[in-house]
Image (cartoon, rainbow, N blue to C red; front, side):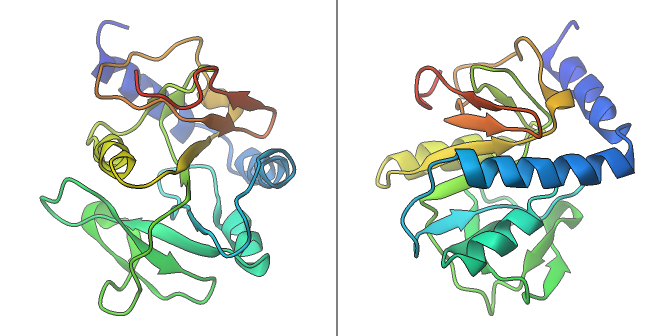
Length: 196
């Protein structure tokens, strides 16, 4: 690969090519592994997930189970030209509409804005040290930097094992995740989620 963008495009195409039946099974396995191996905050805490698009691993069953266990769940809300994500409350009954980039989101006029204690983060690619590659917009990295100024949180990636690379190209603005959970393993950041 000759550039970060070329790496991103190749990794995105690899994910898009994954078999649908395998993806459904791997999503179930990731959910079980997440619930059994990730140290969750106390019940009542806010855990943000996401609405999967473009063959992202499906965290909706995980979020549904977290709500059943007494957590408040939220999903990112993208606003045009805004640099920082808001997180709108989500339940299995939440009605969604197509927001920025056609990503399904709750209605911001009806859903409460929540502050996540634990963020479950999608990605295009990752490496075992917790480096994450997203779509290139920088929304999550800017949001992490913003939240770190006043709120303690953890960020855990959710991905398919097929999205793992020995290393992904990063720069000084990229934030390492505390851990990444796949259907096959949990990868813990040895530096505990510190920025690069």
